[in-house]
Each structure stands twice: as C-alpha cells, then as structure tokens.
Length: 254
Ligand SMILES: Nc1nc2c(c(=O)[nH]1)N[C@H]1C(S)=C(S)[C@@H](COP(=O)(O)O)O[C@H]1N2
Ligand SMILES: [Mo]
Image (tube, rainbow, N blue to C red; front, top):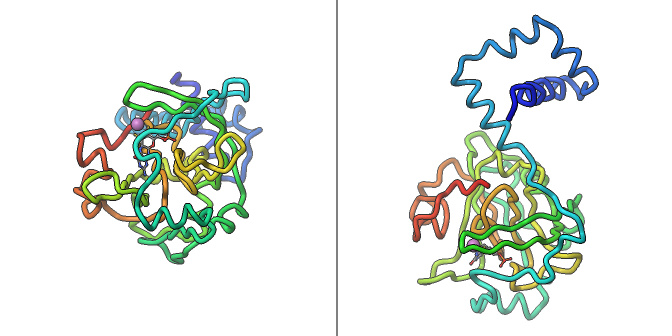
C-alpha cells in the first residue's frame, strides 16, 4: 500500500473519531504540524499500522453476473447428528444461537430475531484450500451487531464459533477469529445464499462469512458464538477444527 494511501487511512481514522469530518482530510494532511505527528512513529509502529490498515480493507465484491451457477458444498454437507436432523425436519423454526462467554448480556436468539436485525448483502469469492473457488451472494446480520448487542467484556480477544456437525471422531466443527475480523464490515452471519434461504449443504440455518479468509474459517451450522480471552481452552488449543488436526494456519487471511 502506498504511503499516501496509508496516510489517508490514518487521517480518516482520526477524522472519523472526531465525528466524521471526512471532508477535512486533505486539509489536515497538508498541515505540517499534523503531518509531523502522523510521521513521528518509529519504523515498527509504521509497520504495525500498515498491517492493521491492510486488515481493515474490504474483500472484492462482485456483480450479479459473476455468480457461480452452483455454489458447491465442502466438508459437512448434510450433518447426520440427530439434534441437527430434528431441527432440519422442522425447517429450523426452533433453532437458537447462543451468544455467550465474555459478554455482559448473554443471549439466545431465534432465526426470526436474527433476520429482523439490520442486514448486509455481499457478492464475494470463496476460496477453499483444496483448490476450488465459487462466487456467491450472501445475506446476513453483521457479526458486529450481535456482539454490540451482547456487549463484549474487557478481556475478550477472540470469537469462537461452535457448530452442530460432527466433523469426525465425535467432535463438532469449531473455528475462531480475532476482533479485527469480528468487527470487519463484511463479516456477517449469513442465512441466505443467492437470494434464497441457505441450503443445508452450505450451512443452514446460519453460517459465518469472513471474507478476507480462506474457506475453512467460514463456520457452518453455527449454534453458539462465544467470546473468549484465549484459545487455549478451545479444542486442542489452535483455534479451529482443522488447525488442531491438519496443521492449517489459524490466520488464513487472503
Ligand atoms: N461446520 C462446518 N463448517 C465448515 C466446514 C465443515 O465441515 N463444517 N467446512 C469448511 C470448509 S473447508 C469450507 S471450504 C467451507 C465450505 O462452505 P460451503 O459448503 O458453503 O461450500 O465451509 C467451511 N466450514
Ligand atoms: Mo475448504
């Protein structure tokens, strides 16, 4: 990223903090005193800032005409767990999503409640490490909305997704992300794919979309969202089902 872009982002951040004075960005940037403050950081800090800025960037969004004709499934595609099967038979009318852990107001939401919150729709490309990609249109509630409603407590550093499918050896799938990804504007809990209710194959009734990451981070069949201080107590400690079993990187940024 160019120095100018990085600087813009810094200024934008500062201006937003002061109440969204976006129009004032360039003027502030031209002001020598202000620039000195911006550029006084040592090399390490500049590096950290650049990483942070990159992590906040949006994933590319595509057009309707780019949609893959079929969005294939991968991993679990029809969970056989009796509890899940019973919910599927009832069209997930009684499905509940718990939001708990390090939050001030733990809650349990129905799908109707989740769908009644503000929604976001995005057309993005999904990349699986196994070597395939697909473009799909996802609709869901921004994870930020759910976390703000529950109120993260001091010390919360990761968000863990607990899934309903036994992914092998009696262990249900799980994944985790940090708070930068959790609050990223394109991080949504999706219940619709291509303007239709999410198919079981793709994670009904609710799955994570975390668009700057590889496919395995996108937990399907989510039944619990937990805020934690550390990943030590989650699974075998590496933060995800495949991280714990196949050496996949916890940070799967793309
Ligand atoms: N609960 C659960 N989530 C999961 C998986 C899984 O097996 N179980 N597979 C992961 C992998 S490897 C990929 S590529 C995507 C596939 O999503 P899709 O089935 O919608 O294509 O889901 C991810 N999330
Ligand atoms: Mo994958």
